[in-house]
Length: 358
Image 1: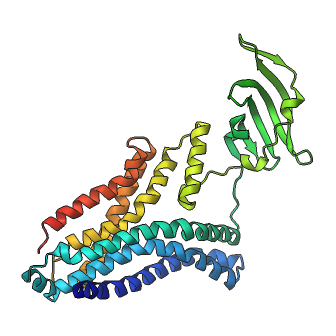
Image 2: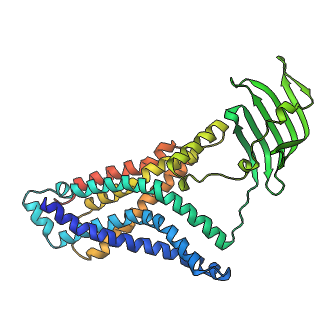
Image 3: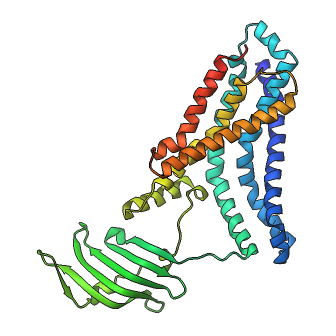
């Protein structure tokens, strides 16, 4: 127990110090990247401070893996340089047994990082980006192409070639009507459809109705009983592709289910969804790697710790970036795109630990 307390006393204060340092650096980098535009737009100091405060949870989320890697690597390397680990090994305590409490701590931090992102990072980062876009006067394009919207639990399907926000217009629009059993009732085609603010429904122009008759479709004038059901708000047709990384896991799952139902590509979004669960385990991976790399040198402990810290983080990020690209294009499954780096570096860490000095 004394060894565990001694190890935690060396690692935990250094971890918090490194986390605050790295989080501050990230926040300052974001500030300096936009400071010129802030000044041009006469942004107040209060608004700039609010952007930085909203960004704090995200910077902490980024900083935790790097901070725990640095604190673990530096602490163990320093103990090795001072021959403290040599004394432990001579007394029969293995490196794995001595560092097991740190591995358990890293697992807890991994789960905590996921919960922290899901509950706090997502909401605060959205506020940060929204406020920052307003201050930077960024213009968002809400026009949308190839829109598909399911309404009334799938009984009405809207499909349009283009939605134009300035006129609230749909062009080349199809409206599919089905009953409770999803049996096709009718299809209405309209060259254009305009949103009526007063009636809160779509007004169709150049509309033709197609009704199944058992042998095909017959055309007829459009029936009001169908057009009166076209009340899906124009806001749903805007360009609102959801960034899975910027929403909670629950909201991401709902969005992916919507893409599946609409028949739209979803592999990239599903990969990002799995990444939400896999990425926090970088905390466990980097701690495991730092333990396996312990004892490689007794010289320049601080420099070597920083170098290994940066190298291990970059390797993990690059590997995950590559596997996510493969998953996006369908070369590997979305699950493997997110989890392969975790599995691979866990195995690499076990091999390093197996051949480390004990």
